[in-house]
Structures are given as C-alpha cells and as structure tokens.
Amino acid sequence: MIYRNATKRITDDLAFFPVVGIVGPRQAGKTTLAQNLLIPGNKPVLYLDLEWEEDRAKLADAGTYLLQHEEKCVIIDEVQIMPQLFGILRSLVDKKREPARFILLGSASPELLRNSAESLAGRIAYHELTPFSVTEIWEPGILRQHWFRGGFPDAFLAPDEKRAISWLTQFSTTFAERDLAQVIGKEANPANVLRFIRMLGHLHGQIINISELGNALNLASQTVSRYLDLVEGSFLTRRLEPYFANVGKRLTKTPKFYYRDSGFYHAVTRLRDREDLYANPAVGASWEGYVIEQIYRIAGKQCEYYYYRTSAGAEVDLLLLTPRLGKICIEIKYANAPKISRGFYNCIEDLNPERSYVITPDSESYQRSDGIRIVNIYDFLTVELPGMIG
Image 1 (cartoon, rainbow, N blue to C red):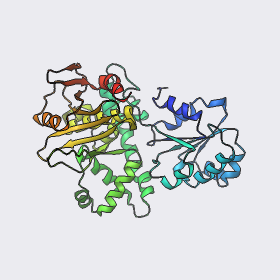
Image 2 (image 1 turned 120 degrees about the horizontal axis):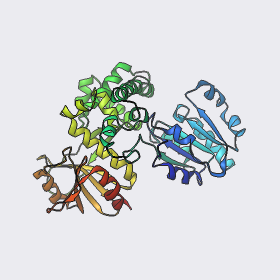
Image 3 (image 1 turned 90 degrees about the horizontal axis):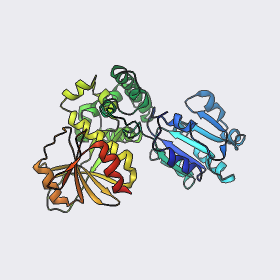
Image 4 (image 1 turned 90 degrees about the vertical axis):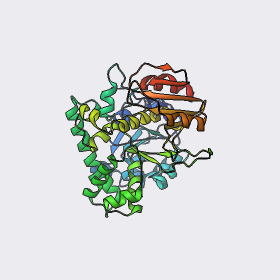
C-alpha cells in the first residue's frame, strides 16, 4: 500500500480527539487509509458506509445503535449523506469523551456541511486527503505519468493510459450526473451539469468571467456561482485569488480557476494520451495547475496562495506568502530551458520578494546570476519548500 503523507497527522489526532474527520474527493483513498490506521488503544473497529441502505437502516435510531458499540472506533463513510448524525455524535462524545471514538469520512467540505459540522466544534480534527501527491509515489521517471493520469488511485495505478482515461471519464460523468446533480437539487438537469463540468475544462488556468460562462450555458450568474462553490466544496476545483499590492498600478482582481487533479482535467477535455497533451495549446496551463496543486499538498494552510497580474499583462503565476520567508515569486514553465519574460522581472520589482523561482518538470536545479533560481518540481517540493514552511 502506498504510504500517505497525512497518515501520521491523522494518527496523532486520533490519540487526542474523540472525532477525526477525513475529507476529500470521492475515490481518493479515504476508506483504504481509515481501515488501515493504527487505532490508539487497539480499539476494535466498526465500519459503516452510508451509501449502503443496510448501514443507513442501522442508523435510523443512531443513538441507540451507536451506544451498543461505544467501546469501538466507529468509521462512518460518506457522512454527508446523513448530516443529522452530527448532533447525535456530539451527545455521545459528551457523555463519554475519549480519543478515537469516531472517524468520519466525507466527500463534502466542512464549509458545505457548516451547520452540521459546527455541532462537533472542539471535538473534531479535520484532515483533507487528496489523490496521490507526486512525493508519495516518487521514483525516477514517474513524473509525467503522474502529471497525465493525476493522483486518483484507480487512474494512476491503471495498467495503461487508455484505461486510466477511461476510468477518469466515467468518474467525471458519474460525479456530474449523480453526485453534483444530487447536491444541486431538483432543478439540476444532469446533462447540463455534465456540460458545465466540461465547459470548466476550457477555463483551466484562466480568469473566470461568471457572466460569460452563464451566457454560454444559458444559466443565471447566481446559478453558475453556486455550481462553482459546490464543485470546489467537492474538492475537485480551486480558485486562486489575485494579490493586491500598493504599487501604483492597475491590477487584475478576479480569481483564476483550476481543476485540482490533472488527470480529471485531461479527461474532461478529452485528451487521450500524453502525446495529445504535449500537442495541445493548453499544455502550459495543465503544467501550471499541476505544479500549484502539488505545492498546496505539501504546504497546505501554512502558506497563502495568490497570483499577481498587472493590467499591462506582467504576471507571477504563483505568489506564496510563507511563514518563514515571506513573499516567494514563482514562474511555472513547461520548458526545461525556460525563457524568463520581462513581465516576471517587472513583477519582482513591484513585489520585492525574498526569493524568486522558475519551476520546470525535470531540469537541473541552479541559481542564475540575476538571483532567480531554476528548479525542477521534485527539488522544489522536497528541498526548497520545506525550508519556507518549517
């Protein structure tokens, strides 16, 4: 089994908190991880999956049922299906507060479950489990496979790229037509929701104009905004906010949009294999989104993440505000012999960062005479980034 970076943090919190939540997209490996955790005190484990009618029936009278298993660590999978459980779990925890009573698995963010999740405030520690990060599966030559297929275990571990993309295509269709349509409610037309998911693929790495997107889909702007929030709350997309600096220039003030898993993005844009990707004009945007997501997966909430763009078009792909070093300017280039734009130098002058990097796929890492460091993604994630976050 591939070791997940989140395992130690989750195990540490199980030794203290009565409830631990593991959230993330469907099929990211949450169930496998939970069922293989070392439970403090060697408690026996009871697993319930709320997608199974039999397990939902057991929890029709949840308080009575769970009281019969209070000596166990109870894993409840897809907990967002029965948000009414949160209040019952709070009562059970308050009557017998001890570590590792419940592990809750969910494919909806705590923000989407805010009203329910607040019931467990002070009693629960949340952890996000993403699809495989490149540092979790690293070996020489694996980078481009991971970039193309993404990190969902069934896609990454598929026997070949054809079957990886087939799995991802089915996954994206099921997510749009069942999961997202279910959350949206009665007004959702599954075909339109799928069209929305595919349309977003063409906006990957771009600034979102909600009005234009709504016009293209024949949806109201408010509806588009709601759909975007729901997809983001399902851990499949990310919006990168612009950075505002008092530099006397007009700045872009609209977020950029990315699909978080590169394989999911390639599937919804119908790229069949790596050669399709390399020949596609969006290859640079794909690499940019991939790098940004891998950095998120290492640094998490220890950093703040922005992009910076002036009205003249000068841009920093990623501006990291780090706890130890402050501002870090990052240009993301698909080329291993990158040409640095005049606009990047202009942004460095505006922002006065502590360090500046150009991240490539697999070039040699070296320092330039102008102070910019060229670094391949693996060296950045494993050598440079840890020193910025402590």
